[in-house]
Length: 409
Image (tube, rainbow, N blue to C red; front, side):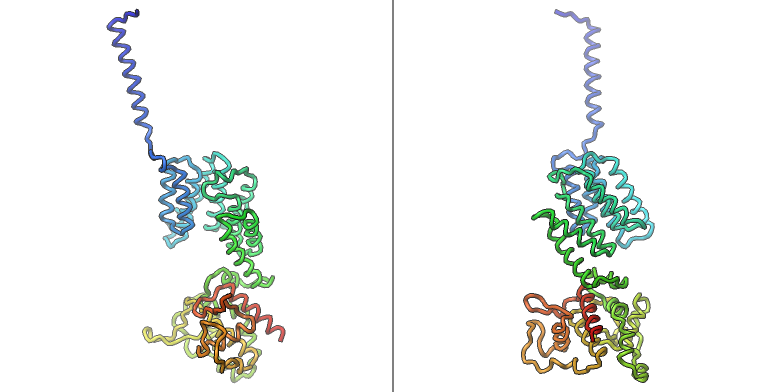
């Protein structure tokens, strides 16, 4: 039996009390920021990436911030936040905000790089790097995207541990998108083909297929030649504005030169001037091209008098509908060939081959002309979709076919 003096007992109790106090004070100082199992950095990162793909950038940034709050060492969360900041910087903010946001985006990638713990986290970092530089486009952006893409190929990734991207073919997809941004449609098509060949079922398969078709049609529309910058820009658009359409006709079809050769009489050339210069094209980058189409009175690209402003307007930012594009192409055909009868060659039909274009429609003859000459296509259902906007690739393909037909004359 051990006998302890009162002094020894007091010392023992004091020691136990001090140890316990230190233990609890240490626990109290260690803040548990995200205590529940579902409130973790990985969950918030994945949710943030999903919101990015939906275009909900503000909500995505909130998720990335929560991911970093839960763990300020979680590299994918930090990299995801950089992507969100880069996307936000593209919106219409003041130059000071943009400068600060761009710096934060790049710095976030640097901070994430220092905290990567495995190949799966490094994969997420490189994908974020590719996407940030593709969005912000500094001077050497494509080189940096390519460098990050090549680094991905050196990783030994366990695809089951990729929390958001799910498969390594995601790198091919976003490299393809970088090629699209660089207007290298051939390189883009090859990358999207890799995605389609990688897996039978993939979250990237469907959108890669859509982008492959876009790149392929753009390549066919360009016909293996270099088109002007306006053509490359138009190729990616789901709709073509009236001002851009005027530029396409002038730069790609050279209507000024072609029409002048088709209408050689000087008196007729003098008469081909717009009655009034539209009041809404002064600041438009395609002002000269618009005036050229107005001079030659291209049907479908006319200006009109606006009672509200009491002036003639061209409405350069309005999209060109498929029916208006049919009228434009028909009018170009008439002017280039000098055959006025083309504009009435299908009058008198009792029924229309297209369920959404009546024979009594003002654009029926034009639709028949462009479809029978292979300038425009219909849906498999037979619908022409006259009210839908004409896409950029569709416009380029039509101009290419028309140019070929005129060269063969």
